Length: 251
Ligand code: PL3
Ligand code: FE2
Ligand code: FE2
Image (cartoon, rainbow, N blue to C red; front, side):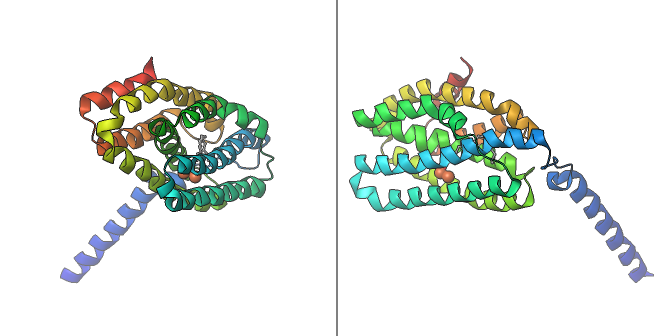
């Protein structure tokens, strides 16, 4: 009698678990059809953005190393990871039979790229780190976290590996800014005011294509804000300062 009850309880538990997994695990919910023309068309731009983003991230870490020569080894490691990411995402496009629209992607990054180059020339390390290691990495983390939930199995596996590295990159910028906060706060705020609105624009620009890939705009924004605010908190900014910085996105 006692035993029987136990078995029944276990069965109920098992079937509850199954229902919960099926309804709360987005991966087992509807995935988009990866073979349609509309999917491939949107993917040709998104894939290009990611490939270009990884290439520019590589170049940016190499450039940042010229401003902190004693960090050359660490920054070279990060740059190498970016090239691996680029290869991975190139394979994702190839796997779906998509040709990446690299011209579109270059334009997509051009403003932010320009701001990074100006900061680099002036030796504004804080601005360079904010653009690459905070804003771009948080953007990548938000995009990859959302993409993992709706990606084809091949791309999902690659993106899961990549996003782990991106947290390391975000962390790199975070730790440097934390250590130097007393001297870099003003430049950090100013650079954020100029560059966070660009990230917001880029997100708006990619939203329609992302939705074809079943990636939700609100979800992307939410994931970005989590990574961004978390980092600012770890850097040592208070609630008011973080709110002020985040507000730059809505003006
Ligand atoms: C830094 O390591 C990489 C920077 C890449 C920036 C990527 C931004 C991506 C926005 C597009 C959202 C779609 C993601 C889909 C992934 C294939
Ligand atoms: Fe990367
Ligand atoms: Fe990165």
